[in-house]
Image (cartoon, rainbow, N blue to C red; front, side):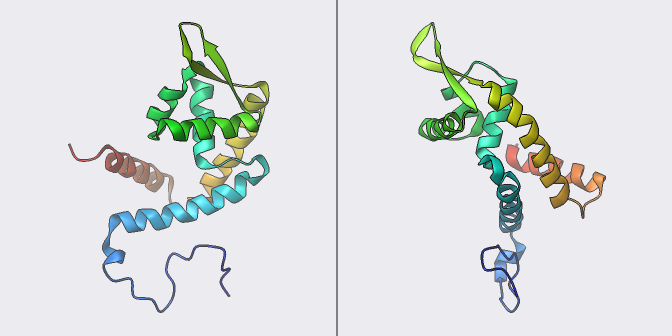
Length: 155
């Protein structure tokens, strides 16, 4: 019997019609499966995919402004405020004043953020490996390349 709390990509006996021919629908079904496993894997830290992405970006770009983070992540500034608030509440990110702009804040990982990001990154890599285990290394590379091309849009 199926667990009613987990996504089933193809429910037996259901005709999906045109949906089964759509690339976007296939990507979305895969994304839901990946998301469910990601959330379960990162539950000990309270980390979601956007929180992880923000932590990695801030760790690699200390002093980044909130507006820059929003642009990089493709979210509204208000969304980045909520995201940073959550990471601040978890003790992972701190806002620092920007001397040349009193209205702006730069973002830095805290010591706890740096420490936990190492463990979180290992858990994400294990999740990624588990979810892609049925693909060969070449297929993984090809899939990432194809998804990158799709994300860049038509020329």
